[in-house]
Each structure stands twice: as C-alpha cells, then as structure tokens.
Length: 477
Image (cartoon, rainbow, N blue to C red; front, side, top):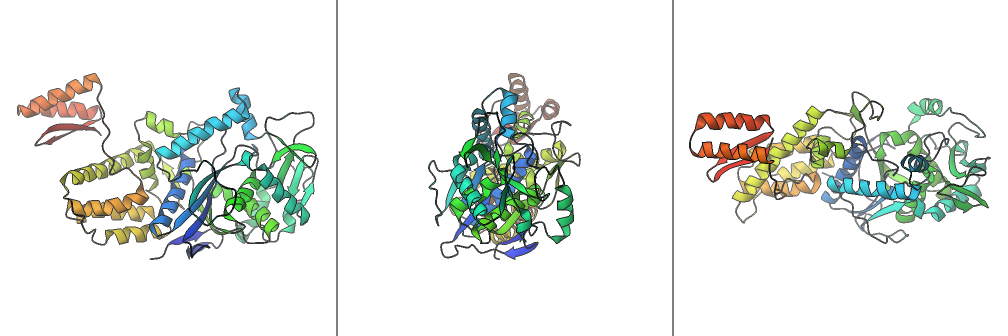
C-alpha cells in the first residue's frame, strides 16, 4: 500500500509522492521550538508525531531532507504583533542575555529529543542552498536575517507590504488565497479572533514582517534594515529558511494544530506572494495533549516536562509509547495512570524481546506477513494505534523467537521504543537489595511462606521478582 497522509490543505487523505520523485528525496520542514523556556510534554507529542512521519517515509523507501527551525528571536508574547519578544522576557526573568537564554534552552531541547529518539542529526555546516539530497538541517532565525529581509524586500517590490510607525506589515487583503489553509467554514472565526487593537493596521489579519525597535530603546537582538534598528516578525523566519534549503515549493510542512490559523496561514501568504509559486504540497498537523480537559498551563500545575516524568521514574520512551495510544489527529488526554499503563506495556514488550534475543538461533525467521501489515498501518496516515495492535498480535501469533525478532527489528525502525536495547546495569538501594537477597535465599531453600511474604513486600515497593532455573531476578514494576 502506498503512503497516504491527511493533508490539511485539501482536507482529505491523499496518496503521497515527493516532488523530487526521481531522486526519492522528500523535502520536509517542521516547526521547531521558541527557545525561551523548557518545552512541556504536549509540545513533545508533536515532535513524536513528526518523527513517526519521517520514519514512515523511510520505511516506504524515501530519503528525507529535513529542516527544523530554532526560533531564537521574533516570537512576540502576543499573536497580535504586540508585547515583548519572548526571548527578551526570558532574559529579564533569568538575569541572562537573550543569547545565553537561547543557547541554554536550545541545548535542553536537543537533549530532550535525543532522549525521545527523535531521528534528527544536524550537520555542523549546512550549505545555504537547495540540494536534492538527504540531510538534517537545524536552522536558527538569528542566523538567517539576510534571507528574511530579502523576502520582505521581494514582497515590498510586489506591493504586498506597508509601513507603520512600529514596523513593516503584510496586507492580507491583497492575497485572495489567505484563508485556504483554514477553509471557508472557519473564515468568520479567524476574522473574529484577529480583532485586536488595530493601531495602524489596515486589516485585522495583517501581520508584521519586520518590527522596528522602539525609539530610545536598545534591544539585545536587533539588526539594521532600511536605515533603522529592528528585528524580524515570527512568521517570516520559517518561510525564508524553508525557501533557502528546500526551494520555493516543497513536499511537507508540519506543526501543531494551533499553528494553522495564524502562523502557517501567514507563512503561506508571504511565501507564495514573494515567489508566485505554491509553497507546500502537504500540510500535516498534530492535535493537542490535554490535561484535565485543557491545554497545559503553569498557573494550574499542569505544565509537565520530560524532567518531571524522569523524576517520577518514567523513561522518555514510556511517554513515546503513550503517544502511540491515539492517532496524531485525535486529542489525547494525559493522566499519570495512563502513562503508567504505557510504561507497563512497553516493559512487557521489551522483556519478551530480550527473552527472545537469548533464545533465538542464528538464522532469521519469517515474520509471517506481520511486517507488511505493520507497514500498511503506518502508511495509513500514520495510524500508530493500529500499528501497535499488529505489534501486540505478533507477540502471540508468531511462534518462534526468530520470527518475533525478525518482525520487531523491522518495526523498531518506526517505533524507536528501545525494545531491543541491552538492559542497563541497575542496582537497588541497600535496603531493597537486602530484601531481595532474603527473598532469593528463601526461594532457593523452598521456604515458600517466607518467599511469598517477601515477594509481596518487594511488590509493594515497586520491585517485581522473577524466578528462573538460573536463579531469581528483579525488575522495576
């Protein structure tokens, strides 16, 4: 079955083929973080979905040229082109320079995606040109100011801009296709939501391409343009950097659903009006992770980071497993109980895989059609719940370790759950180690009354014991 993806632009599932079909290279742009704070696990649900997409493309035989941006300037605290730059706010909050803030949170983000096994390895010196080859490119907004101002100049030359006291704006009334991503059914809502303080804006949906620094104020991040100090608007960076590395038209652009009505809509406007060409062929968007039926928030204690998960004894890959419990286009409710269930399911799969690794012979086994079924599920608009159902079924239906491992090795190219990783050497605290040793001794002496009591005591402390012909072992429940 060919890879099929839901395209926000067409509002249906379409068969996918790349623009550079002869080379087999897919051009992909994913919206990266604004590096002013830690990301929460809702943000990382989007990165997991995008990673599954990238791995699915490779599973279906494609190579991927992947650009991800780092927003280290220009993202204002208000969607209405008002307020301070988020980097400036963070610098004041932490008593650092905006540059140091960006460096720190970029590093934490890269560590986080590594722990989630996000398939992204950025080269040290990506060439600033469109190339028909696979690559991972991490693109910083502050490192591409000339590309952004060049796009503003191109839009101005074609009559799509106007200047106000505080910046250069895009005139949305001059782009008939402005609402095509949101669809006609949502135009009224978008216009209503955009009714903010107009200032000198001509239309409620007009947006800043370039902001001028306030008079008498020296910003930490500002550049000379048109004889004045200023900084780019948030939206211009993605259009300019995508064009730089992927061309005027490319295959896939991803992000969260919250980007559809403003950020991605504005990206399309400025990119297509500057080039005169279609910008993106497939738009894919991931739905929200909800906590207490709402979006994550620091104010109500629902802002949860990967570090918070680790503090509670979860591996980031447990969270990746949890994300597979719902389709990426469906909202997913978070609870600690549900995460615990995902952790248990992942642990059981891993234990079975490690047992099979010990028992399997040298010859690979036939996966009995399960690889094809898994590939079809993943290719059906990244249907990971169905793909996981195939995985669980394979564990009971494939009758030999060799067959199960043959399937699981192939599936792990997409799952990335660490199911075949060698177990980490782990020790128990001294009190629990002593308790376990007492259990092992009682079991060996066939003192079943004592061993049963000690087993229960260990289980209450989160330690699961297993008895084999070679002796007793333990694992965390």
